Length: 277
Length: 79
Image (cartoon, rainbow over all chains, first blue to last red; front, top):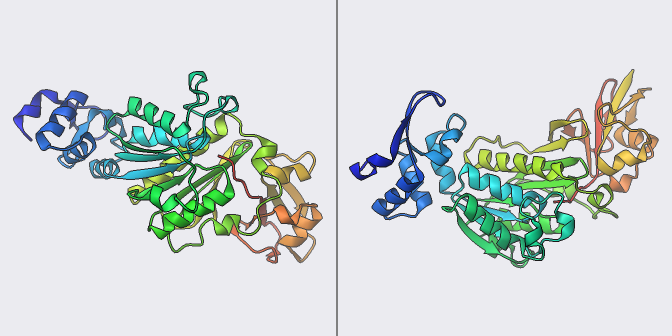
């Protein structure tokens, strides 16, 4: 490690197992300049020498330095930036994804204020993907964000997903989910599904070659959407988005078993169960 | 001799007084399929997307035994 970085390093003790070196935010800028890299790949490079960016030091203990570096080199495509997508974007930025693609064709409206993280009174009428990109920049300025302010469809999905390592399904209609899953699998990408109605939510990772969402949503669509009748209350999307972000990190770090498990979150009990499809 | 049945989201509305933390305990009176159980509860079959038997996906014609746990889920698309 070049001596020039020494002023930015701190030996941390008492956090997790053993002591380690952390580097502060100005140090990351200095390292990026020295290495001729952008901030996220520079942080990955530091982690490979077991130097933790201080902003991720509390991830240590759950993530190894190698896993943290792998996240910084990964891009997640978050399709839908409403109830689920806002939280998923914030969580993946905070945990250390290096790049995000944010896609949503809708604008924030008053009825979103009960649950959508980045819906603010001052942002009503603005595109959800664009607002989410601004908020992500304020949380983690090193994240490379690509904004797609239009709805993902069977026609444009493959184009939107290009360059991603994982796709997170935060959509709100079953046909759109099936179209994006198909595009994800055709690109060889894992797909982290999430859906909610009332106090319940479902999450599942589907991978190329599996039956995928067709096993869950096959056949004709329901006559009336469950979420129309049961509503989408405040905490359900936040809780389910945590589960989706967690699954995405597990998949990216190779920790998620390759079983077709459907996670059913039921806040009315409350409980979480894994069902095997 | 009994089975436990849990219902998800809109299917709960089909059974008045359904309690999510308890589910339903139904008597098990000899051979019956998951379809028989759904029909006995008056569930709209078109709305059932997933049927689980003891935590694993099962076809509606699967037979149910004493002490089994059955769960019915509709499609949910909100986000």
